[in-house]
Image 1 (spheres, one colour):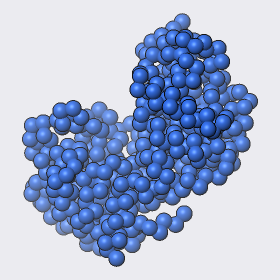
Image 2 (image 1 turned 135 degrees about the vertical axis):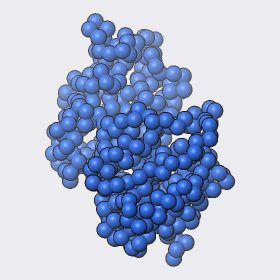
Image 3 (image 1 turned 180 degrees about the vertical axis):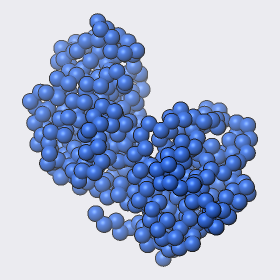
Image 4 (image 1 turned 180 degrees about the horizontal axis):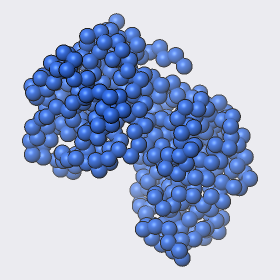
Length: 433
């Protein structure tokens, strides 16, 4: 799909320019990279900049080093970009450097320091191949909002001549995603363009369209569930979201479903009555007495039609694979023209059968377009079905988004222009005209 309302990297003059690139390389957990997919998907943008004579400065957020209650920022190896830089240097055989800044207690970094100018000089002279800024969330201004955020964005812009946003998954309106646009010519990278093009395969999905959404919190997914009721032909739920739905509809209680989730689920169940038979209820669920693992004698399978009002269950940690063997469920998936999956059906790492059954059934439909949300959905596909994951990376009938939360936000908004970083790019191009 041609994207006509965004400034694109291919239209930018990059010759001898320092190019600041916001990427979503949020792939480090406790100092280790578990899946480099998000990094690999940005290499096309980096190659283009280099081929056009640009000098690259990268930045990303990693994890959540800021305590939401106290506002304190914890700078540690667990959320460092160093493993990312090591990966890029080894993969591309280049020399990329991380600048050193001064940490101010629990305030993190107060801003960009002049010491970075030495590295920029080396970058312009070709003595190094790139610069990778520290975790953007280590800086006090990144998530601060207001004047602090604007000041940090201005400092970031002062490092470069051009800004490229290739971080589709980083949809939150922070200084590094929406602020820098105010001060530099700004363009969408190739990954950003590719993600938006594939979003259109959801907005204009070929029917029948089956959507599968799971999660641990109802409140973070509820708006996208309402939106999917409108645009999908069938909706499948999993995880705590499905548990809350079952509690609300059948009058049971399940450990781990709190009052807030239950309230939202009751409202959703009532609203869904306007969409008769649109929700596919998966019949078999796995109850466990413990969260510690799938222990013999401590888990059992229930059929949801056997639930009795007032019944109390321990933790429901998976959908049993028998659910996907039922003829009615199989028919919906096998006759679908589009399947969207943003779901891990079970409690990882021990309850995997539901996710495996879902992915295998989806793959059994060779004609459907199969779109996977990023994050945990992507990582579990790789862990549980590595062969399918490898096929899906390059197969035209598959697409794996790099940002699952961003996809759901875009679905909720009803258009990719509802994402704040995309709005910022559009505003930038209008101001350049």
